[in-house]
Length: 216
Ligand SMILES: C[S@@+](CC[C@H](N)C(=O)[O-])C[C@H]1O[C@@H](n2cnc3c(N)ncnc32)[C@H](O)[C@@H]1O
Image (cartoon, rainbow, N blue to C red; front, side, top):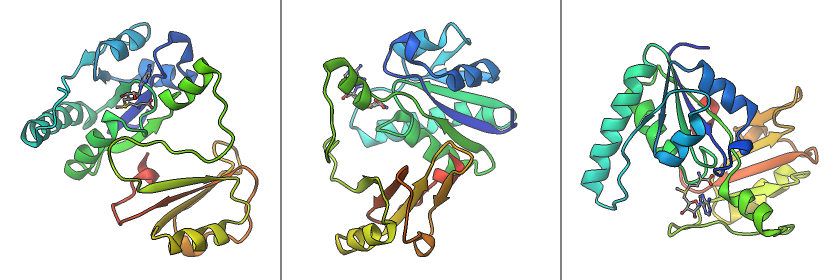
């Protein structure tokens, strides 16, 4: 494994049989594994020793900033000369503790490579458990405004981008045949092609917050 690496490892929804093989390999190979709570610790236990980091549930910004700072320093301290996994429930890129952690670590320690391993999210787990099939557009939200969109079946990506731009979206990622040998990921809007494959996605975002997906 690469030295100087932090991996956000999705552990799935809580069923020990719903962890990916890739997650297990990462946990086994890591020099250190951290988790945000007991449920995640129990899922990691068959594969690695881990330490629970405290992430108190509070909206107090002062407390929160101290928590992020402290936990980022702990994680980065090990990731500076080794591979560290941070295991979490669901997926590391959807409403996840890891998103905040990686932002702080990246700002302070840009030399640490940060990547993620997807996990089965509560969103798809819910659908499976309840027999709910979603086959048309839907919303996933918490109390924050909708700031991004994902368009599936992006066969006409340029047209989609033009239409989303008129709705106020400013940043776009075109992704085709992900995890295959023909994988294509284009984050430069001008390079997004006119025609796309059926297995394609456009991600659109408002604002100009820095995208770090290329690292993870
Ligand atoms: C901080 S978010 C974590 C989401 C997670 N990263 C994911 O990909 O599912 C926490 C929210 O996810 C949802 N959630 C996570 N696990 C769940 C479960 N086992 N059952 C129901 N909802 C769950 C709840 O809405 C909860 O408030």
